[in-house]
Amino acid sequence: MFNLNRTIANPKLWNKRNSQQSRRSPLFFPSIFLISLCLFFFFLTYTPIPNYMIFSTSLKTVNVALTHQYPHCETRLHGEKFLWYAPHSGFSNQLSELKNAILMASILNRTLIVPPILDHHAVALGSCPKFRVQSPKEIRISVWDHIIELLRSRRYVSMADIIDISSLLSSSLVRAIDFRVFVSLWCDLNVDLVCSNGLNAPPSLVESLKQCGSLLSGIDGNINQCLYAVDEDCRTTVWTYQNGVDGMLDSFQPDEQLMKRKKISYVRRRRDVYKTLGPGSKAESATVLAFGSLFTAPYKGSELYIDIQNAPADPRINALINKIEFLPFLPEIVNLGKQFATQMIKAPFLCAQLRLLDGQFKNHWKATFLGLRQKLDSLRQAGSQPIHIFVMTDLPQGNWTGSYLGDLAMDSANFKLYFLGENDLLVMNTAKKLALARHGLRFKSFPGSMDAVAKVEKHCSLDILPDVLLYIEETICSCASLGFVGTTGSTIAESIEVMRKFGLCSSPIRTAFAL
Figure 1 (cartoon, rainbow, N blue to C red):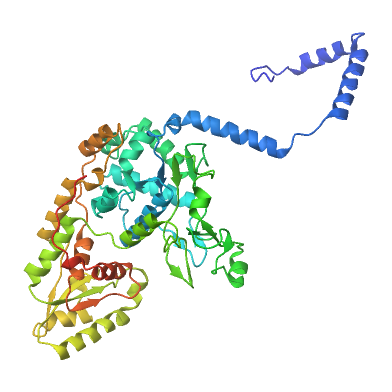
Figure 2 (figure 1 turned 180 degrees about the vertical axis):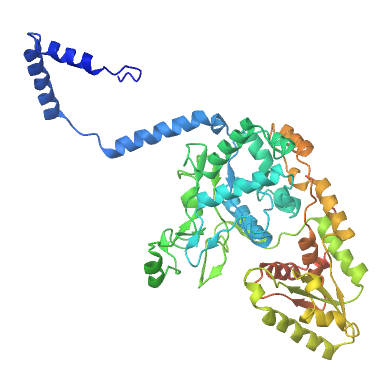
């Protein structure tokens, strides 16, 4: 072995030793002969160790080391297995991903870890059609960092604090656990300390957060019986279920020009999620199955990532597919939207959803206003004035001057406009009700989780009320009996159309659920 503390001989000592070495021992040459003979026989019989054996051994060593580093990996939380994913973009996209996550969790018989609502575009995926997206590992890391930011700034609002999934849970179509409760149990992490310390967390807590985030994001790779990180994304995979041949090529592939320009070699295959990640697979034994993005959309005759429209041999999953097409807001939101329509507008009205400032929409004002103008012209010819219009827009009222909206507001003889602001008393009261209700923590708990729920309730209360304006506006628009004009390409418009399709406004006023 090397002695790193040894002293280096000075030149005088070195010369003295050289003179001493000239007087060699009589056994010197016989020793050299024996060593040479041993080396000859060693090389004659040597068989090199295959690389795959070295790699396999190193992987096993890494997994053992990680299991010691994360002792909670050995805990199965009473035999439960979980599904985690990384939501992103705006609320409508996050809602779409929640539906896909519910479906995947049910197919794979896993408990869904329900995430919070992320800030608008705090995390972005990229472009699936252009094959330019964040990798699953990258997006999981980004989501983890943002969730911790929400917790530490006391702005955490669960998707289940806004979306009503009680019917799914009560019918046993899916199981769910709040992200904060899961992290408390699985990572042995005091989330209540994260909230109570805010932005001044002690170093030990920061290190625990990094460690848990590293594990859950899959930075350290897959860990046997602990975590399986799904690395497939929309560039390579379209997930299916009981539909077609597993592993066949998808109809949408990168064109040759894109492959040359971007120097990519992706091949998209259709893979059955149950066969790939279900019983008998490497993923099946892991306590946590971690996806990246679960966003999908139709594109060029295919789906960008998930193509599960029905399950020919699974009536239970078929029932779930039908139920998740429309997931309503919680009663506090729905009831206020209905009351605004009946008690504030008090007349048949049109809803205009005008997205004018965000992304691509800011360059298409004329096209956005054209559809509204045509609809209003037809209503004027068919009925009496004034025409009542609920306006849902991201353009501040102070900037309406000079636009078609400004013209409508000035023409009070023919049009009467209604709108809501985030500081309106009705909106703020609804936000307070939701903050106090904490529906996301009302799931049926696992044994031993009640203490974690109690700590989250006590220490992780909101400092800033949730922004519920969007959800109330969508509900009001679902009640517009004179019709709905939405912005082409807006996912918000698509959500409102679904609400109108399912007759949300015609259903009776509901009470909040309790599980």
